[in-house]
Every structure is written in structure tokens, then in C-alpha cells.
Image 1 (tube, rainbow, N blue to C red):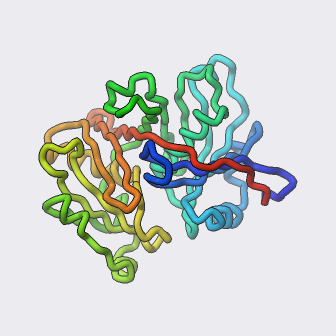
Image 2: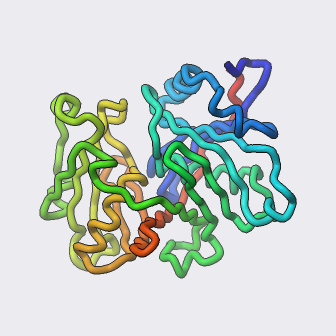
Length: 281
């Protein structure tokens, strides 16, 4: 178990927003040192959960393997990553992955000699992240912001949650008031609410997600669930490039692109680092 004899860098990053204190916050903890990619699976799980509970937000940890050859390092960087809520480990977490990529790219962890590409080794397979700032206009990011693109496999709604409820309008979604006790009793994982955005808006559909059984009453912005929503709404609306808006209290925007042939969903978003520090325990 890590102790105070070895410190670890951490940051709190707001994902899927370009404004501080919006979007979905994630605490990112970096286990430094060559060879730590092998050690991340040996780190005490109770310690990881304790750190997540201390931060009171979903916690991301990742560690780097031994440095690859110089040429490979210029092309991409690879990290192992695990995700925790305050009560459990989860198999996939989109907003925390975006937060981790943002921290690595802006915090000087991934060198400028790379192409801005990062590979994350996860429980759900390989997840790729890329800095899309250089072509932000092409991918629809306003204000020329620093945009990160994640590539996930297509998923089914059943893989992401216990149930989905589609409402007829975004107004109905926004007016919904959840009963978390009843959701906790009937849902093993989560309940997803979705509805079409108003005609003429810059958003295609609106979503909410409630998961009290994993200590997340309302997920402020959930990236991974859009691996299921992207193919559904692409078919429903007849287009493969979509913009989703989470109607949570903090809100957040996700830009989606479905590659049906490869069965992959590209999720693009911005992020803001709001806190950095050192974990001593």
C-alpha cells in the first residue's frame, strides 16, 4: 500500500466543459515511475477506494510502463488506468478518461515530442485519446478550445445501464425530478433518460443519468453511456455526427461521431484543470 514515503501528483479536472466548476469533475492521481504500469494492478484496492472517498469525486488512477523506444514514444504514450467511485471500481468511465488525458497533455507528463496521442490500457480494453486542438474547427469545437477525442467501442444500452427511458422532448427531460430511493430499489446500475433537442438548436439530444447504487445520484456528464446512445440517435436522426447535452445541474457537451464499419464511437470534449496538488497518504 502506498504510504507517505512516496508522494503522487493529482489534479481535479472538470471534463466536457471549457468553464471551471461546470461539466463533470474527476480527481486524477498519477502513480509515477518507470515500471509502474505493472504495479497498478498490485496497488491496494482499499487504498484506491479510500483516496476516491477522500476526494468525494470519481477518481482516476493511471501509471506508466517502462519507457518505450524513442521512436515509439514520439508517436504515442501508453498508460494503465483504473476508475473508482467513492464505493466501487467501474469498468469504463468516459469523463475521467478525458480528464486524465487532459492532465497528461497539459501537465507536462506527455512530452511535446509526441503526436498528442495517448493509449490507455483498461479493464475494458484499449482506449485511445488524441489532442484535436489543431483541427478544432473541423470537429466543431467552439472558440478554438483544446479538444480531446476519445475512441470507444460501440456498446448496447444494456451494457451501460439497467434501463433507458426516452421522453418526447428536452423540456420533459429537464423537468424530471428523480426519486433516488425508488431508482436504487429497481436499478442494479443506472437509469438513463433521453429526449430530442429543440428543432433548430445546436444540440441533437438531451440526456440524464442516475446511478445511486454506485454512489452517483446524478452523473453530471457521462461519456461512456454515449457509446450506446451514439448508434441509437444516429439511426433515429439519420446522421453519424451528433452533439449531446447533459441536462444535469452542472451540464456538459459531448460531440460524437459514429464509425459504423469499425464499430467505434469518437467522443470529443474540452476540459479545465481546477486544482493540482500532491497526495501524501
